[in-house]
Length: 121
Length: 107
Image (cartoon, rainbow over all chains, first blue to last red; front, side, top):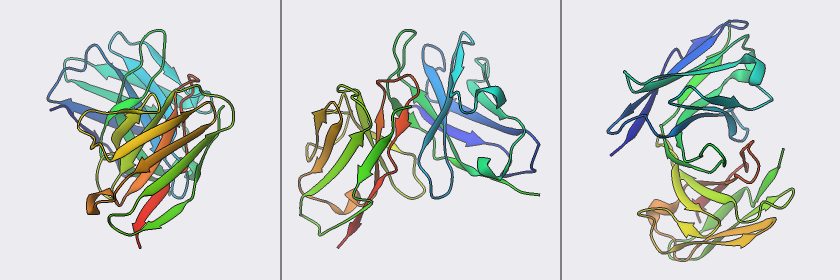
C-alpha cells in the first residue's frame, strides 16, 4: 500500500530555511495532489500548501510568501522549503496525500508519521 | 478562514461505552467535513469524510453526523485501539482548517 515518509533536519537556526522531503512508496506520485501540514506544540493542525505533479501549487496565505513546494516525479518525492524561520515555525510537519482536484479541495486520505522540526540557535 | 472548535478537549470513557465528540464550524461548511484519528508515533488516519461516510476499512462502530456548523463523531462501543486523538477538518473553504482535537482516554 502507499506510504509516505518525511525526512529532513530536525534542527534549523532562526532566519534560515527549513527543508523537508516526503518520499512516496508503494504508488505513483502522479495524478494526485500532495500537501504539507504542520502542528506546533500545543496548537492545532495547519495546512501549509499543496502541489500537483504538473507543478501546480497553492499555499496558505498565512505562510505563502515563505513557502516553496516542489515535486520530483522521477524520485517519487515532493519537498517543502520554508524560509526565514522563527521559533513559531517549530512544529511536527506532516506530508499527506490530498484528494483535491483542479476545481475543488477535499480531505487528506494518507499521511506520513510526521517529523519534528525545532527552530533554535 | 473558517475556525473549527472541538469539544470536549478530553473525553474519559470506559471500554465498551459510547463516545460522542463534537465539532463546530464558525460558519456553514455544508457537509464538507472530515474526521481523523491519531495515535502516538503513528500517521494520522482518515476516518470519515462528507461528514458521515466512513473511509475504507473503518469499523462500523464509528459514525458521523451533522451539517452546516454542527458535527458529531460517535464511537458506539469503545475498543482499546480507539483511545487516541481525534481531529475534524473542513474543506468547504480552500484554506482547509482543523479543530484543536479531542483526546479520548481510558476512564
